[in-house]
Length: 494
Image (cartoon, rainbow, N blue to C red; front, side, top):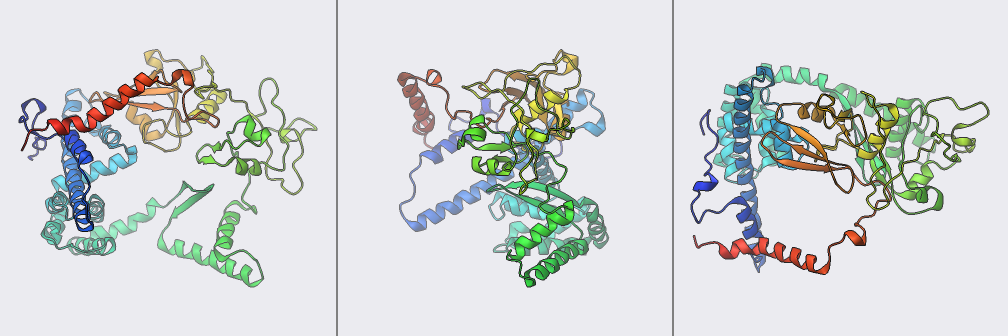
């Protein structure tokens, strides 16, 4: 591959009659019988792993070719130089069913492998490295110039078997040592600059737990851990029955929020059906920004406060003072659990599809009530495969294109996806669906659909009237079998 052309790919209309396409290969592998002994099973597992690595290398070459092609098209369309390549990573992410952030990392990996690290790319193509280990080598040489990175690649020579049998930690150590030998100043500056990347992140964990992660400079991280451990040891010595880990976790929450238990000055939204709230139903609830939680856990969360029946015009806004003589939620919290005041907001859904009812507005900016409506409906960014928190409320069809400020034309997006959607060649339109559905079209003409996640209480299957009849089900089964085996039977001999 040279600097102006993509990888060598045979055009579909000029492919030999007996050429095997990627979909054909997938169907052939699916139709092959499994080996009948343990040794043959291990051999094929290894061969498939090598094939996965070779496919990853081919994807990298294609990603670089796509980036070059899109940059040429954008330059021809008059896109400013500093904006060339916008949206390419997002297209790769959609094609690989990954988040946009992961798409950016994959494109960066592809560029480094194809243009600067030929030995690592060759090792990936031959199965001596998998995609993750190639990523580690690229990551550890990211601070180097192109020439120094190529020199480290040549020194390590992954395609010569020098890293055979080496674990991830040893591979990273070898790459760091080689990078430091080539350019100690850049490596040192990278370490000094790393402190600017400190941050705190939040991720859901199983069983109504979460991961609160802090990336800190090592000195501060050690200090935090030592302070929490010292406090936990003191409490344990005084007879506290909690484990050391529990005490450290509880201490972190209390020191951060200044309140035992940590509940202070926040609004925690819980979406559940009326049956779950009032009748003890087992339909799970949902916490926006976290995900699904058990029904009993959700009821326990608000236990100790008596919810007030929703009145005409809705309930008071969070943070607004209660009316004289009233407690939030309509009743005083129980003395043993004063953590929450409870307000109820009614959300009406279609009984069959679970789609929220319409709420329109003529305003240019989404008003507060409509914003809450869309955030409750969408939960996270509506771009396919992106689970990032909602940061922007977006007009699907822009206002300058005649789009309305309504729930049907509104969508919750993360900041990056909203900016990507505005780049040339991207379009989005609402489409009919079981729930709110968006059709996203990329500059290459590929389309992807995003359907709002089901709210609690939504049936898992369509109603009986929407189910295909016996004849239609037989047709679908026949089509599936044809797709699986038809090409395999018709493949000419090599």
